[in-house]
Image (tube, rainbow, N blue to C red):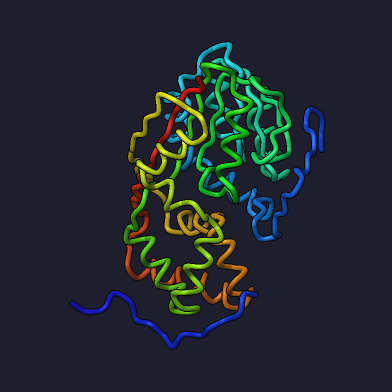
Length: 293
């Protein structure tokens, strides 16, 4: 069997507030420019948000959100999970460090309240919420132990925390994306960018580790479950969605603008050559849930 990719000579590079919204800059928190979702907020709202919606609906259901519950959505982004919780009749507060993402959340779900901030220093009193949820956010935390401890702190006794994270594995589309990037910067720099973008993806793709982490946060009655989701979308929509991910933004930083634009052109050429448009992308998701005793 021939090699899947025709690799060119590698070129190594050197890593290069409105109403009802309150700004909070947590002590000791520093976010590099590439990490902010503000740069990709419009594209994320247009392409990526709808792909996270089915998992968000399941997350809210797994958390047992009901009418009258007070829910905190950590890393709310464009408010996808917040909207699902509102639909269940809950009172919702969404928190996120990216103001432009929150602008989309406010436009889509104005009934919720929104706070600029992040999980390492939540600006809420203990026992403030019946449910705390986080949709694809835990894998991005710099210090997940500290973040989960604070999320548990604001949860009332008997309250439930529910989180989602991508499962392990790479499909044919991801393999082409990765191999094209590696052909330009090499495997080591690509792996470094992936780790920077989602430092705990591997950790939370392991259900045993996921459960132990929730246990270490002081939760009980812990369980995990995996679900699969299929999306039919154009190649351009898929690639635009990939570019909104934190790992892709870290990759852009490593490559620099010139090589990043070469990469974007080459990966589109590869996709056009290998796959029929539109494509069917299937993603597996792990959910973890626990109760505060």
